[in-house]
Picture 1 (cartoon, rainbow, N blue to C red):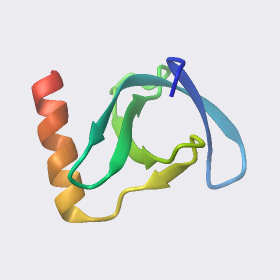
Picture 2: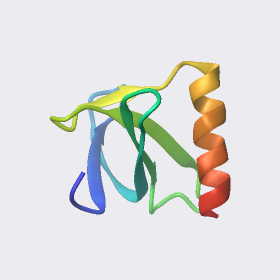
Picture 3: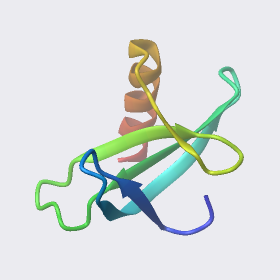
Picture 4: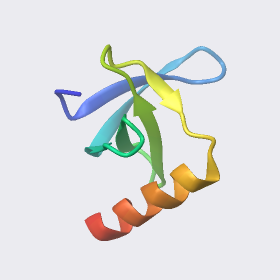
Length: 77
């Protein structure tokens, strides 16, 4: 990921611009991750996905992965 903005597609097919907080790689899993937020969301909810070399975002659904992401985010803040 080379910019600080990404476009995501909502469930209804609409697109939304999000702001990237940071990216990181987890060599033990062989994956890259992006944490991002909606700049228009007053509550500041943070989202995370893994992504491949082409920049395709992949949802995270493994609880162990989420725990690792939360740990990295905690160190970030």
